[in-house]
Structure formats: C-alpha cells, structure tokens
Image 1 (tube, rainbow over the protein chains, first blue to last red):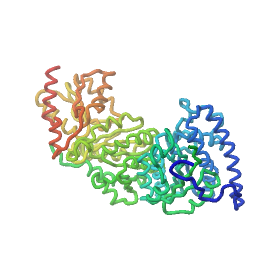
Image 2: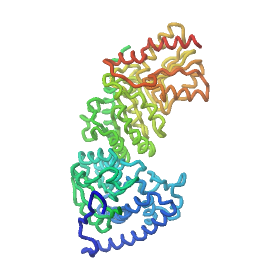
Image 3: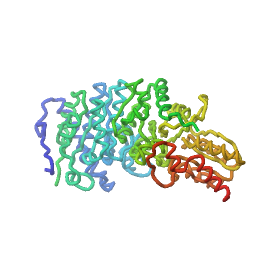
Image 4: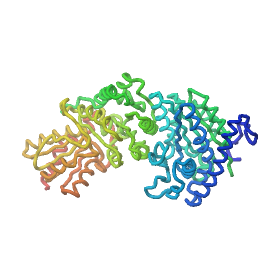
Length: 260
Length: 312
C-alpha cells in the first residue's frame, strides 16, 4: 500500500454479491461498461502517446459510475446532475466514456488534440455535450461548481454538481478557498470527488506535498466526507449514501491501489 | 479642480439601481464591501449579495459558476488583488466568454495611504490583452454610474476600473456612454490628448491652460479602452502632429502603448506617454500629494509638453 495512508474498504462489498437485486443489475451493467471502456482507453492511450495515462485510468470508475448511474438516477429523482472534471488532463478517459455513451462518435477520438478539434487535450466548454466550461488549469473546478450550485438554489432549480478533483490538485490554494466557501454558503448540492490515486506529476503525492489526512481536512472545513476504494460497487453505494445527506457539502475520497 | 466626488459612492449607488432593474444581478464580494460600497447593494438585496471572504481566486471561479447558472455576477475587489486571479480571469472567464463583470476599485493611485502593495498601475495592460474582454475606465461619477448600466446590458466579460474617491464631475446627468465610444471634450489642431479615468480632469486643466497660451488642443476621454473608438482617435490624430496619452497607470503596456502601436501602422504620429514610469507606487497622505510625487499634476504635465513642443 502507499505511503501515508491506508485504503481500508469502508464498505464490505468486496467480492460478495450485492443484496439488492437492482443494485446487482446496475453493478453488472457498469462492470460491463467498465471492461469495455478500459479496453478502449488502453487502445486510445497507445495512439496518443499515453497522454496522462495513469490519471485517466484511475478516474475511469468514477466517470463510469457518475455518468451511468448517478446522472440517470438524478433524472428519476427530478434532479439535474452535472459533472465537472476539474482534473481536465484526464480527458482521454472522459472522451472514451463519452464515445461509449454515444455523445461523440468513436471515429472522432482520432482527432484528439488536433488544432481546432472539439476534443482538445483539456476539455473546452461548449464544444462537447455536458462540458460546462473549459478546464486545464487546476484548482478551479470547485469554485465554479459552487457558483453554479448557488445560482441553482437562487433559481429554485434542483441541480447537483459532482466535481472530480485530483489528489495532486489539492495542492492548489484555490481549492481550500472554495472548500471554505461551500461550507460557509451551505452549498449541499455540490459533491467533491477526490481521485486519490496517490500520484501527481512528478511522483507519489506524499513525497511531494503531504495530503493526508484528506478526510480530516474536509471534515475540519465542515464537510461530510466519506472514503471508498476505487471500486464501482463501493462508488454506487457511497453515492446513494451521500444523496441522503443534506445541509452540508459532501466529499467522496476514492482511494486507488497504489503501486509503490 | 474639484475632486471632491467619490467613484465608489457612485458605483455603489449605481449597483443598487441595476439591482432593481435586473433580478439576475448578483454582487460577489471579497470582504471589501465597506470599502467598495457594495454594502449599499448588500443592504438592499441581501439575498443577491454573496461574500466569499478574502479569496480573489475563488471570487472569480464562483462568479464564473453564477454566470454559467444564468446570473449576471458582478465580482468586486480592489483592482490590485483581482490581479492575483489573473490566471482564473484568463482561463475560466475569458476563454469561455463568460458573462462575468469584474469591477476593480481603488485603482491607480487612489488608494494613496495604502502604498505600493495596493496601487494597481498594471491592471489595464494585464486585462486588455485578454480576448473577449471589454475594458472600461470612467473618468467621473456620472460616467461611473452610466457605465455600470452599460456593462450590465452588454453580454460578455467586462473589467471596469474605478478609483476610490477624488473623482471630478465632468459630465451632466443626461450624458450617455457606450462601449467602443469616447467623448471628445475639446477640439483643436496641434496636440491631441487622449486620457481616461481621473487623469481626464487633469488633462482638461492642462488643455485649458495651453489653449490660453496659444496652443490648440483636442482632448478625448477614452473611457472605453477595449474596444476603443478607433475612428475618433484617427480623426483627431490626423489634425494633430503630436499625440499625448495621459494615464494613471504604468506607461508600459498601458493606453499610451496601445495608442502608439495603433497609430504607428495607420497615421504615424509622435506619441508621448505620460503616466507612472516603470516603477511602483508609494504611500502618501493624500491623492494630491501622490500625483505631485509622480509629476502628474497639470503644472508638471504642461511644462513637460511645452519642452517637447519646443523640441519639435
């Protein structure tokens, strides 16, 4: 396991079948999608010189669960749910997933990072369905999500925003400004998801700038924080649990298996 | 020269008026509402006033989110400290052409007491180079009020630069101001003075005095810096053989540089840039003490122009 923290499964959902049949069905569907997306991602990464490969791989379960479970479930509940990939450099995973969900043509993946392509290296706002704004510069996603969420409250719209942050991204000061804002303004329709893969650009996170304890830091800022393993079943259960919590902002720390 | 009016007071009152007119307007503060006078808006519309605390980067991101949510956010901070969020302004607001209004108060030397850390004399050059941005700098309290309305009616990112107090009153209440336009305050033949912000009142004094001494001066208030009124600048530059830009800003990258590079490819003219030379501000006990220190009083400018005139 990685230095500085232990990825303890908080939910005992490892290899046992789920008790709820509907959950089991969802899980099976998502696993199929995951296997397919994972293969597609590996193929895609080969073609694009492994552009941010590890960051893309670690965020895949999160994206699959959000896009195929959390968003559709929101529709059932009458809640418009949106996703912000604040760690925009994991765009290969996002584009593969959007192509799997037929939001973009599979052939279009070939245009990745070409001048004027819709598929810019870091996703740009308004170019592809569901990309709310341009990312690429770290640390800004939660601030923007807070603004969208706050506007929705003023408009009396039922809207929720999931913001996917990298663990390295937590080094940015603006992240902590915005974490503080979420709590101060009682923004409970924002969900921060931290892709705790244990690595940032130049190496293991704890060797570069100590992150732990991320959970305690969020809690100290007034958030409800939950840790899960980077596992689709745990993600589904955690997202359901978090949707029951109201009145405070929520964080989900998704711990990967760290090779070190 | 009567500089007893207040930019921020005019700004704060104009915000209340746009707040009444447009329900989408949200004022976002960074713990300076008592200094920027957004407190007037906060008192009138507490539900449409948000403070994110002393966090300018978050101020910009949060306001971007409000714009994405269909609101018209007006993000307010001291000009200087907005500049620490320049990258957020560039990458999030400008790239996506978001409908965020940014108002920087206490610009130039207007925050005389606080000194160099607080005196933004680089902001025009930093923001005017960003695509999609409109940059405005009103010269008096009337222009401030009217440009707040104009800014809110315009779709797209706007940076408006205002001073603290020490504003003149140049215009009548009926005066109209439009993005991309300018005000020709004097028409003459030999020298064209282009100015904006508080230096317009100073320029008026310079021009009046020079006119009495036999010169013939044109004066343009270039309150819309981006886009700027190219036609009018060309028209009056054609008449003049010498163009002078007077600004409360670093001469590097400011409007002097902008006009100089614009004219050089069209009708080359000798352009003199008068502003703050490559340096920082300093604290002073009054605004007048500082403009004296930086040689931006009418007397200093007039003497400088007379010397240049003799050299021509």
